[in-house]
Image (cartoon, rainbow, N blue to C red; front, side, top):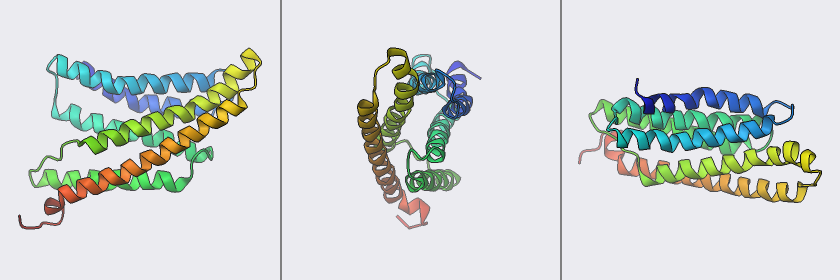
Length: 195
């Protein structure tokens, strides 16, 4: 187990910790949740950088990096649904796409075809991460920073929340768009079409 893979796998326990912190009401829990999320998101870039720089790229690393991204983001999205931050239908769309594309990748792999990460999938993941970051920033602002500086951040928190929701919708769009792109590109493999 090399360092990039350890960093990759650390996102799974970090997701559980972030989700747990999101449900806590003690001071600075929201701040800790936000910064742990940021650390995990940066870790997503760091593990790839180290793997490339030290020539530690492996099939396991490629597979687990994509899988832990999905687990990390979807876990936090589900927590948002429980808190009524985002509608369940948005998260269900993302969940369906991830299962469909993961299933398609398995079908392709069984036929000896490697489905590489596409730009649309990377855009989708980046947009989702930014949206989640905005939505996690709101409770930090309201619950932790406002009482400390004795300032009403409500108008700003509302704007940030709306931006986060807008980015979330954009992320859902990129999720669907990239899913359709994958299916169109690899339809011959999926549907056993003759090429």
